Image (cartoon, rainbow, N blue to C red):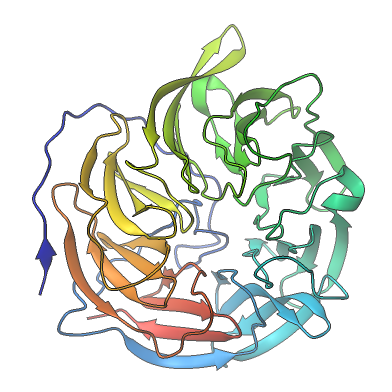
Length: 430
């Protein structure tokens, strides 16, 4: 049965325009973390409109991905991810046509030690190159066809980065000829490298800047985004001390916002829309909307509103903007579906209703619906409808192990679910 709840009506405000962060290899590719534009949105249409009478069908299940929570990137008939093996942490290429591993390339010689052991990084594909970051802070460029390593370096050794308690979790950003990642250290908040050679272009030193008392001096668990707010190209990232904006040209720290930081783990990627940045963290913190303005070249981040944790907090699993609204799971490690009007902060529905799943939810958007993948493996199809909560069915995957934190990927009419060493492919066509 479709479950609906009534609309709570609130006033509407105008919004800006989303800024793409990376061009896909083709319309049938998912070349990096959270898809072509790093926003968790698939361009697929013509998918199953409901999972009530007809559930997604398992087409096949493969293995050999190693242990980890990383999601997957897909270009052509090759799928890429990272995983732990007995001899270290590696990048894995999986041949979708043969449904088997094509190659595996270690970037560490031993398994990185940290809480919830396993890989985190979804590889970034750029032409014939692949970029990945291991959970010990090792970054490398590989040939995506063979796995050959062109270069690698380590954030802790070269930039004084402190390894987060649960390991480095970023998926590196490719922007033109540059590769950007976060170290979060006083020496280098962000690091910009020549993507071909690995040579340093610039770093963002903290200098005399005070990022605030909340949080830690570390990279955090989010990935870097491109932002063109306030007429200034910049890189935005949620780090251990909150959200920062860095000049894309020279790495200068433009602005920072500490209020959203917490002392445990800052995880979700912010949402960028025109001159606005929406950010949230869990652990009892909350969410905020920032308005970026340009004052003679100085970029200011003004807090438009702050939502306390009892109103909205995204632990992990991500937030997705569709139209004027943000959809995500709220409550710490609960994943209660919620719809928030971005510019006003008004809750449209949710916060006290949820499907059967338990724990936080990793969220992906496709064809007018949101796919919530809960920690216990349960998947729920929820309509991206700001007027009411509409649950359109749930199902349990064929295989489930540990915590199902890997983000779902929807491409070419198929749903890809990474579950530790295994990969499941489901048919989403009617």
